[in-house]
Image (cartoon, rainbow, N blue to C red; front, side, top):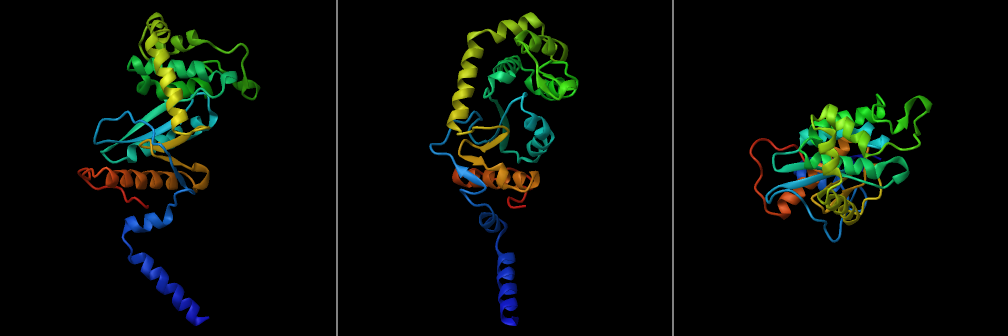
Length: 244
């Protein structure tokens, strides 16, 4: 028994002496906590940057509940990593295609980021965008609100006239953006929301992790892996520890 205990302490001591990166490589296992996406999907960030992407929907209750944690993740990223968002259209019966159209219209008009929190609140808190009947247990409203309801929302919160929003929403530019988003989600091999990917190469298995602290640590580890793969210089300042 004493010999077993001594061996255990020796192993633990050896692990403690490993560099932080090596410890993280032991902790995070490809095929368990994350998957390598093959072939890698396209990225939308400038050269020299590493993309962290959330695939989400405003109509997704889990995305609504995760929004504050996603914002913490965004703030925790090093200077050479950028957070991007891809809106899914998985559930037409709950208005996701319309919300996707609204998101990319807002993005094209430069108001998506400023209204991101307000859109979640309008759906899941105030009911101002009447997608669900919040007084009836969250039942989907029939008929579903159309893009006109989104235009009224963005006129109020994004300072864009409703007619301007609608003209953009019905343009060829937005049709192409929607097609591109659906194709990217397919390439990322994402089938549910919220989902996180790193630089088009890694998909996080969020269900295999013990909460958002683990998720953030794994994302930072994979950002570091991509930095090494791409031979990018470390950004100025102190980097977060990749393994937690």
